[in-house]
Image 1: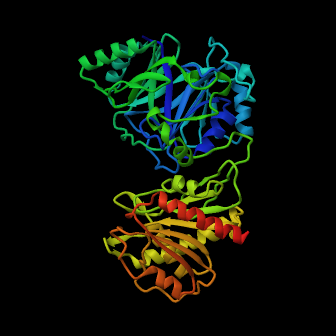
Image 2: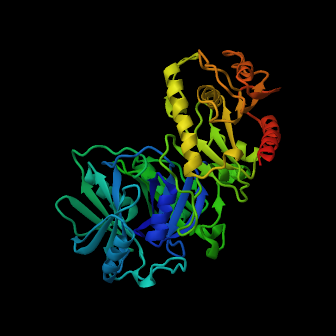
Image 3: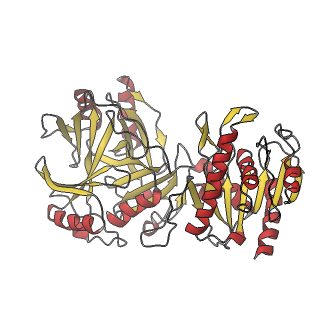
Length: 521
């Protein structure tokens, strides 16, 4: 033992800003893209040196537009990366030219240190330490090899029980005591990386979320070593989890007495097990048990562009939203509104099957019901907050107008698709704000306005798809009749289905969208 850190995993809120910082600014190589093993619909990115060496790996769970976490005890508070001491001036100048927040240089435990903040606010220290070899070169970086980041220097852990955290690391992960201060105990591995344990008695507890460090993974030579440590932890009654085969390494998780999550991961098989070394990080992989869903997952996982490439510049608009851009976009944009309990990713695979060449703009409702997104407040199973419906309909109409301008969408090739609660929101918005939504496909929709206004929908084309065994099908006034009375052209279908959508919806929707967009073009 004592081989040091394998990787450190953090949580980010915005994948594009994350890639721009770690690849574009720090010059690390993106060496792997996967769907998460705990949640395949969560993107997991790995950065490292040119060879994806253990000890150089910084990984991120992407919680796109997720809740902000809180740094506190029971969690690492900062990470540090090794550079050559002579590179301090280079990195100071580079940070200033890239408009990256930076303080220093200062001396921390005898080492010249620059303190940066990544886009999520995580402290990333660049520490000048002699004796580490130059990293494996990645030719895609504009950082010269002599100034490049060598490897992970270490991390700082906040602990209410620093003595117990220290003894845990010494006993199970091979660290030994080194120079410290009154409030920081420094431990060092045989490979030279460090763990600083800061006494956090009286500090607030940590809370998981974006902008926090999820766990630190230490290196194991092989699976046998993982199993030996597994046995030792079990005999000491530690709160271990089961061992896991993560394809790129074999590992176990454990929480140390102060609450910080540790992992023990093998060096092999490594990141090149499923893609050539010269193509590392350029393909998306998903856990083997979800391989049959890879096309759907590719649609749901957030997209990003490499530094210097054209990308979607997200605008500050009323609703959290996500773009999906197909390989060959045809100029059509479908705006998606999810059903109750869904989110902005829920309809993406469905819409991509119905219109494979359409750009998808998926929104997240701003109301919540037992923690899940909705489009307006529900007072009971059959009664809705009418003021909230009108307020959110106004916000949606404003979003549409702003998005057309901000993202240069073609109104003639704009289609709206909603399911259940999202379809109800679209129907209400059409009646309350005529001429904003002119082509809408509503799946399992109902009228939720108690007093629908008179409206001119003579320029509106609506597809209604109902399920013949939908338990909500008889709720509220007959929607098709109201829309026809307002002048809309309504194509109403009923299929053998319940409240959920299925392949029969896709076939109808594909035909309907193709006919309307072709006519508009």
